Every structure is written in C-alpha cells, then in structure tokens.
Length: 195
Length: 198
Length: 210
Image (cartoon, rainbow over all chains, first blue to last red; front, side, top):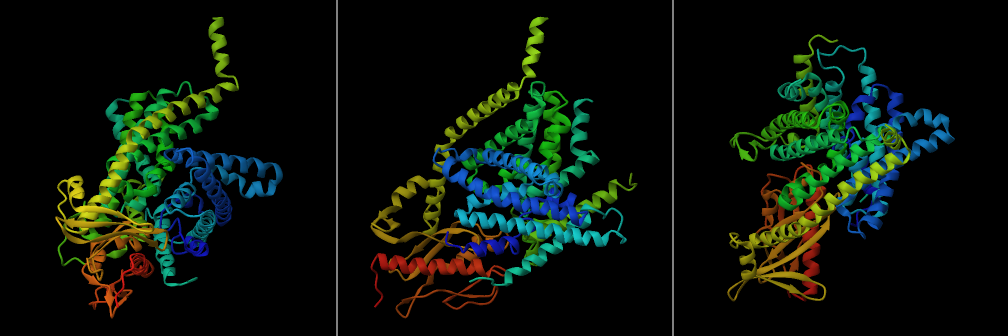
C-alpha cells in the first residue's frame, strides 16, 4: 500500500484514534483515568509497548507465520509475544531504573489485557502495512491513546467537586465525555495535513 | 447453589451487569448493526462457555504459576475456532466483524469468569455460568445495537421498520454515539439498581 | 504411601509447569491444526464463489446456480500484464469485467469494474474489500454509492475522464457523482481508482478513441 506513513501516523493520533473510533483499550482507560499522574504513566507505558510490539509482531507474522503456513495461529502467537514482551520490559526496567519502574512498571501487567495492543497488531495485518507503516501506526495509536486518557483524566479531575445527577458518576459520565471527545476528534478529518 | 440459581446469578446479578458493561469495549465497534452484534455475542457465549468448562476440568492439575498463560491459551484456541468457522461458513460476516473476533481474547469478562468461577467450581456448573454471563453480555450488546440501528438506519436486523418520513441520524452509525448510548445505559442501570450506594 | 508422596513432589518440581504448558499447547495446537486443515478447502471455495457471484451480478446474469452460470457466461482472459473476464451470452459479448485496486484512506480497496463492448461506458461497479472507517468512509460499499457508477459514460470528447464529486443529495450531471458526507477522502479514492485503472487498462489493451 502506497500510503504515506506519516499520514497513517497523524491519522492514528487524531482522526482515527484507536480509542475514540475503534473503542480499543477502554477497560483500563475508564478505570485508571481518575488521576492525571497515573494516566500519564499508563499512557506512556501503552505507547512504549504498542510501538515495539507492532514491530515485533510484524516480523513474527511475515518471517515466521507466513513461511510456515501458520497464519491461523496468529491470535495466540500475538498475545504470547505481547505477554512475553511486557514481562521482559518489566524485568529490565525494574533492574536498571527504579524511578522509571515506579512510574511505568506498576502499569505494565495491566497492558497485556489492553485490547488496543492486540488490536493494532491485527489491524496492521488486515490493512497490509509495510514495516515502517506498521511501526508508525503503532506509535501513532499509542500517542493517540495517551492523548485521550490524559484529556479524560483532566476533565474528570475538574468534575470531582461538581454536582452530578444520581448514578451518573464514574463510568457513565466518563463515557459521555468520551463521546463528546470522539465527536471533536472526528472534526480533525477536515484538516488536510499532508497531501 | 442449584443450576437455576447459577444461571440467574451469572446473567442478571448486579455485579455481572456492571462487569459486562466494562467488558463490552472490544465489541462496541460492531454495535451499529444488530445482526453483527448478535453474531459477536454468540461468539462470546461459545468462547466463554467452553473455556470456562475446559479451565474447570483441568483446574486441579494447573500449576498456579502458569495459570494465566494456560487460560489465555485456551481462550485463544476457542476464539480461533470461532474465527475459522465464520471464515468457512459465513465469509461475509467474518469480513464485517474483521479483527473484532480476534479481540474476544482480550475481553475482560472471559478472564474474569475463569478466575472468579471456573477456577473454583465443577465443569458443568462452569459451563452454565459461562453461557449465562455470555447471554447477559449479548443482551447488553443487542440493546445498544437496537438504539443505534433503529436511529441510524431506521431498521432492525436489516428490516426497514421506520418509513420514509424518518431522517436517519448518521451520527448513530458513527463511533461517538456508541459512547453516548452506553453511557446513558450505565446511568440508567446505576440509577435503577444502585439507589443506595454502599 | 511412598508412591503418593513421590507423585506429589513431581507436581511441585520446576519442570512440571513447563511440561504442563507444553501438553496443553500441543493438545490445542493439534485440534486447531486439524480444524484449520479440514476447512481450508471450504474457505477457498467460499472465496471463489463470492467473486464469481459478484462478477455475474455485475452483468445481471442468473445467480441460481453460480458455478453453472459462471461456466456458461464468463470467460477468463489472461494477457501478459492483464487478467480480466469476458461475459458472453451465446456468441454475443455482454461486456468486460476488470479486477481493479487502489489506495483508500486506511488501506487497499479492491473492486470489480464492468465496462461495455465499446469501452466507453461503465456497466456496473462493485467493491470487494476495503478498510475505510466504519460509518464514514466504509459507506462506499453502500449500494446507493456504488450504483451511481452504473451506466455512466467515461469517455467524453475522446478522452477518459475522472468523475467529479459533488455533495450528497445534489443532482448530478453526467460526469459527476455524489460523494459521501464526511468521507471526501474515501469517495475521492474510489473515483481516482476508477480513473487510473481505466487509463491503464486502455493502454494495455491498446484502445484508442481518436
């Protein structure tokens, strides 16, 4: 596919944000977004894991699964790669940087079950991206996810002291806010960034 | 607990409704059409029931340390079966659902039921619990799809219900409406069932 | 007693979890392999059937028995650079069908384009695969959008033209089509795809309009 990788990158952040248009990674998005600090930590961890697992899964898919005619096992293999990568990252970070481990490390186990990670790997295969397109798509989706959770955390922080109708706290109001955010992000599709 | 209680508990218990809504994220994208939601729901019921059943059978032999890996492996295997089945017999549906079939693996409900129920109960009860939790989940999916398809296309299961006078809301077909409908649904359930906060 | 103790200690050794994982993986792996290989043929058949019924539908040919109709009406033609289908009823040529592809907003779009004998009018157009945003660009597969290309002339003043997009619900002239609101990029992708492929095909088949 001859789509400019930068276009994919920008679109993954704004117009086709993985969370706001594909609903992926919502569980941790709703439960962690109470505090800005933890949202930033988780968002960064997602960005990091997403970028690298999309690269690894690309290589695994095209150089191992396709030649061996094992494409039907892709779901299992992808999730194992993701789980193993997350474990490895956790070990390395814990060993070499206690400060980073404090900000990122505690969120890493949450990431294996984040559907955005598996989703990006599946989308890049279906859309037949090249390696560079796949990596930039992964990175863009990570930044998009980070942006979305930060925005929600900021808004929720402001809402803390406000009066809300009964039963509307937490998930319900977060979803309505996310809906408005999704509308706003779709508005970006009018902007031609790179032609 | 008898079988009926397990079913009711799994499908309608307050806690389960709450959990089901959180686990819905991986399927929200297909809720703009009722048929897609139904097929997705059936896929989840199949995976949930059989993986609960299998995990329960081997629960006494599973080493604790690799428990999560074993569960993921089993869930992923059933998801792949659903995927292959759809590709072979309902290729159009498989195309419409795209990667979302694969994403059933990361659905929190399946892991949740495995941990909370199948790990502690006998295989048959786990099977019932799985079917029940899946049925409750499908119900939520269908409810959202009902609103979105009716207002977005004027139809239900592809059958045109509303006449020419109806101006379709194209926003209902697009992503933001799923957030709004789900948010309102959670609000309603909270309001109705959690009147007295704990 | 001694036997029981020994057995228990095995399940506590370090190897046990690994052996257990291997057994589970092998068990499910082999079930999946059997399941996959027993359905590959069917998946292939379904794919072929879908393509064939789409080709037949473009020319309004009977779809009761797809295999039989296909063998009766459609001839597959292959040249060095081009693969296409010819629809024929008895000795009368109904038209030509070309598999075409292009790039959309998100990924590839592949489609079938049927043109008439004189190679100046589109008979019908059908999108097979696309990856556009659901609800927005994804609406290019809707009948109302695709059917706009049916019976449209693409040769005007001896040249292949690119259709112009006008906004939805606006009346169109002969070189215009209605775009999808909110999905200009995907609509444009389809129009350009048709234009580029038609030019390429006409060059490869050495058709001139002078």
